[in-house]
Length: 441
Image 1 (spheres, rainbow, N blue to C red):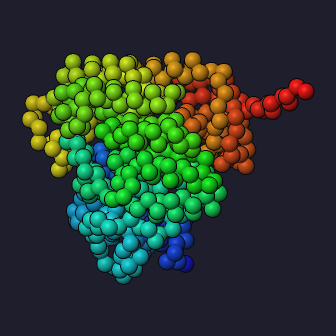
Image 2: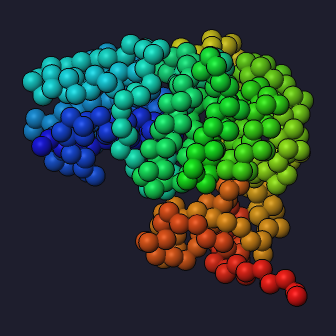
Image 3: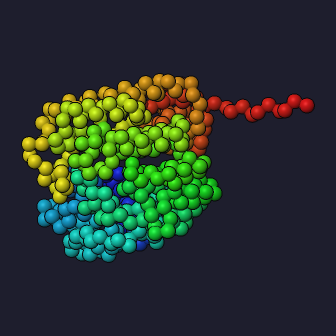
């Protein structure tokens, strides 16, 4: 039986797509392997959101040439494949397949052709494709990534996603619920609903509030998460569904990108600083103790000192639990590349602003985490930690907690007391919950 190796870069959606590809190819008789060395087929599932992500893939393709056995098929899938298309075949003669996110159904036949020496590029969009008949080969036995929406209609000026993923379209609610039942049958108790702007989900009959309630009500599900939402799509219905569905976790990853209204306008984010703050206030009013994380870009064209200071001040005002911080990366085909050249921020200024932003975010995170020492919380053990004999666990509000355990602990829940913090992660000690005392008389 031929062997298949898939190496994944980028976001959770790419992880989910790799699981779908593995599932499809296993159904066609392929056997998954955990190394490219000796594999009959090697696929690199790629990200295009930033230039350095694509450069990593180009470098990796060069490395793989040394490891591939004679006759092995090498393919590039995902967003970089969609963006570059046939150009990848022209610039790298060893690559035989270039397959975009809507063409994975064709993989078995494309691979058969490649094994006969042919080369293919398949990057057409299919607005009906949700891979409903695919059975994902899930990488983790702890949580399941479930795509509920593909593509994006927002078209922020810095973002390549509408080009690589196409326009927004949502799966039918019944199909998402069906997959959730399948996940439970596999022994998984946490699901993560995926979409580029996931809270704008609408299948024509049901909105994201309906979806949260339906998935959260599936027997056997203990935790429901989702990523990534857009601030504009937190309707009162969605916030009520979050607050009223016990299985929905108390965490929101709210991509802010900037704290400056003028900068947000250039980014075409379609909300102001004041509207972002109002969204945060509504979320926290409905869910006290909500964990809140964000994405922030520095060095966007034209960013002034005052606009950057607005971002720092918003971080101080909101006090995010954590932030994913990025230096602006111009992507071919996006409106940001057509902005005046004089708007380009010098690299040294970008570096200084980035360092200041990271210091601000980390300082707030450390202060908040120190204040929580001694607190008790439920965590789900996810995997072995990178160092030592501890295991990595996650709280409902998305805190990383390192706990003692054994391989058998993975996938189990425990109550821990937070006993230490590095500023970013916690250490926790398992505690035995006391049973309530019997009533007198």
